[in-house]
Amino acid sequence: MRDAITSLTSSAPTATGLLLQPDDPVCQQDLALDRYDEHFKPYAEEYLALPNRLPETILGWLDRYVEPARDHFGDALLLLSHFYMGGEIVKLVERYGGVVSDSYVLALQAQRNPTKTVIVESAVHFMAETVSILASPQQQVWITNPRAGCTMEMMAKDWMVMPAINQLIARYGDELATVAYMNTSGRLKAIAGRTGGAVCTSSNAHLVVQDVLDTADRVLFLPDEHLGRNTAAKLGIPDEHIVTLPHPSNMPADWTLGDVSGGLERLDAATLILWGGFCGVHTVFEVEQVTWWKDKGWDVHVHPESTREVVQAADGSGSTNYLWNVVSQAPQGAKLAIGTEGHFVQNAIERGRQRGVEVRHLADIPGTPAAGCGCATMSRNDPPHLAGMLDLLRRGEAPDINRVLPGDMIDDSTGLRTRLNQAEQDTLVRDATRALQRMVDITEAAS
Image 1 (tube, rainbow, N blue to C red):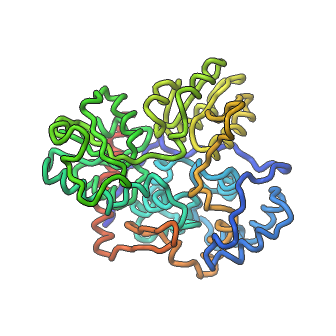
Image 2: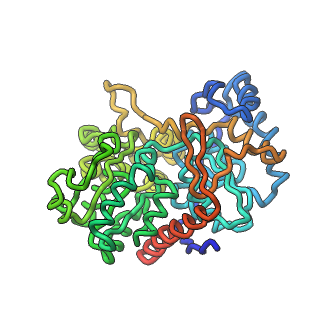
Image 3: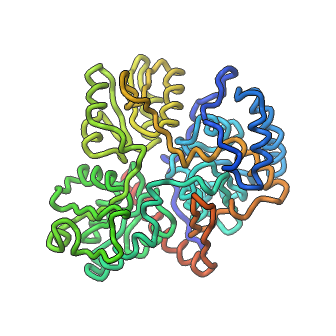
C-alpha cells in the first residue's frame, strides 16, 4: 500500500497570469521531424506544416486534439507543466486547465487530486516519476516526451552513485544519511529513505539538511554540489567540514574513499559530503554579472543551483516559485535581474511587463555573447507532443514508453527504458515515499 503524504496549503499552485497574445509567436524552436517517435510523427508533420506559429493558428490546430480528450476524460484528466518549460507550453497547459508550478508542488498533485486518474506532465522525467511514486494505484502518470531529461540527474544515476554509497555505509553505518535533491531519480530518492534521510528542494534544502543532521553525524548530499554548498553556507557549516566527491566522469572504476582530497582523515571530519554534479544552465552565471546589474540599481535574484559566490553576491536566491513570486510581488517600477533558466526568464519578463516591472536575464549584458540559456532537454516537450499524447490516450493507443512508473530509467539518447519488476517497484515506492514524507513534515513544521 502506498503511504499517504501530507500536503501543505502553502504549496498550492497559483495561476501564472501569462496569456497567449494574438501577435506573439510561440518562443520555442521547432524540433526536427526525426526527433519524434513514430507515434508522434503524424502530429509533428501537421504542426511543422502550419503556416505560422501565431497563437490563433496553433490553438486552432491544438483544439482539434486537446478538446476531444478533455471531453472524453472529463474531470479525471490533470495536465501538469513546470515553470521552466517554453512559454507556449506553460500558457497552453494553463489554458487547458492544467497546473504550472515548481517540482515540489507538481510532485504533490496526484495525491492532492485523488480523482484525477489520467495525469499528463509536460516536464522532465524525474518530475513525472516523482508524481508516480506518490500516486495511488488507480492513477496513471504519462509524460509527453520521455526523452525530456535533466542533465544534473544524468550525472547521478544509481549505478554511478552506489559504489560510493556502499563504501560510505561500510565505513559510517547509521551515522550516514542521504539527502536527495528533487532532481534525482526515484532510485536515489529510495536510497535517501533507506539511509534515514530525506528528499529536498531548492527552497527547503537547509531545513531538510539541518533536520537530518539532528539524527545523523554526516549527510551525503545528491547530486548538486552548488546547492549543497549554498545550503552549508545557510547552516554555517565551515568549508573544512565539507568534502566534494569527484564529478562522475572523473571517478575511475577503482575509486575509493581514500582518494578524496585530504584523504580519509578529511572525510571522517566532514559533516556534509557532496556529490560532484551541477546544472549546466545555472553555472554560467558569474559574480561580475551580479555586480554589473547591482551597480546600475537593479535587484538580483538567482536560483541556488548557481555557484556559492554568485548566490552570496545576489540580493536573494530561491526556487522557481520564489523567483516567480519576486516578480509577481515587486512594486511597480522595480528592476529585477533574474539568474535562472532562459525560458523561465522569458515568461518572467512578460509577467513583469504586465505589472510595470522590468525584468532581464542576469547574463543579458550588452556587449557580451548572447545569453538566456534554456534547458534543452526540457524543451523536448512541445505542442506536437502535447497534442499527440492526449489524442493517443483518448483513442487508447498511447505508447507504453510514455507511461511513467516508479523506478523507470530512460536513456534520453536512444529512448530505451529500463523498468523494475513489481516487487522492486513496491520497495522503491515505500522507501522513496518515506524520504518524501520526511521532507514535507519538515517543511510543514517550519511553516
